[in-house]
Length: 472
Image (cartoon, rainbow, N blue to C red; front, side, top):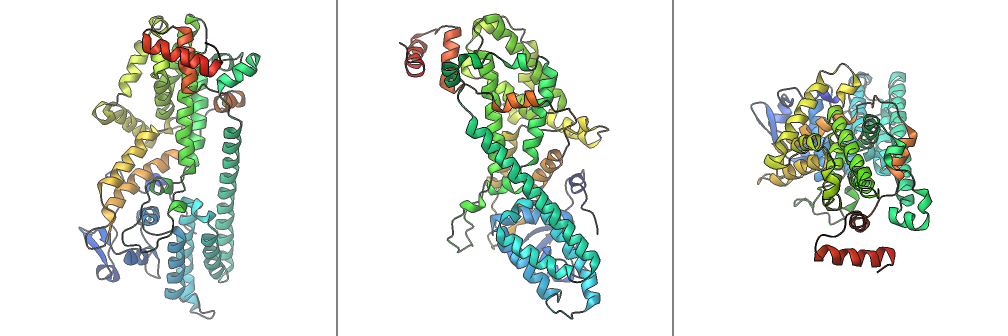
């Protein structure tokens, strides 16, 4: 059975491979091409184009692009039902004594399509209706020959493993969020339980950067490509079904990743605002500058940006006496790299460099590219908002979806990288579960360290002391 090639092979360096050669049916079947590139088509014709027949198997870039974008127009289970119907109708799989030769030619192709779907979009199959259709079609194929039976079994086992791993990951996330408490609450109730800070847990900034990379890659790995599209699902104007669209907006892993970024920013700010002594706060700032610098060297831009965000939070940036003790030259360089001006030009240049390094990598360390995630989502959002899903004639605007698939497939390559660093459970546990300050608690800690500078700050300090500490 043909193996699914890696994602990096899907799009060539000049852009993406969208030369889908027309067959006789395509040119008169509701698909529109220009210079041999598929630009648009009716939804029905695009579905037909996904289904293999004896002489045809869809281009892999087309399969990925259509499976990714079709959910803006229909539920994956509806698409699956149509694909199954077409396979059965067209390929005479419904006739028990159908042409065996025909079956031998078409079965591996249908199996390959199902394998690509289950490997790339496994979360679609959490829906029982999807699983039912998959099992039904797989059973029809498997009843043909022993070879197919083994391949079907292999595909199903692989899918079930992926779904089980996802359920396990969700349980871990739920456990972490149910036990998370505010640091101030813990300080008030059990002050002795927070004697540690991050430097006592991990004194080496390089090791901390590596452990952050572990968390980033694990969380990235669980994001399904479809979550980028499902985040922006709206009502399709040509769809008369009034059903609720919320069940299509399955973006839990994407949201968990954004929550991790926010947590890391707050953790950095908490660790800096916690120490009573100025020199300890300054040491903590310098420690995080070194961690951020190593994140940059690794290609972990998401942790880098979260650390910079934490250090730029008002409760931290207002600590002028503390910052006066810090050698900030290294921090200035990092801030320059992540400067938002000119649409993050400096960062995008660094990201391109890391992506290039990844393509020619000799070690898994060189393969690491962890993008600044909020910006990636923003780019995809603007691409989605900037072009219509349908053309005035009702055709699906496929040119837009090539571009969307190009961006998402690059992310798919990055998320599959194995983390080369050794795991340190103690450090990971601390990073994921240690209580952090809320924004109010951060301001309070900041004012306690370096007193208010004006009436507004003074009033805020009084009100925070009264509400958070019960003191006047």
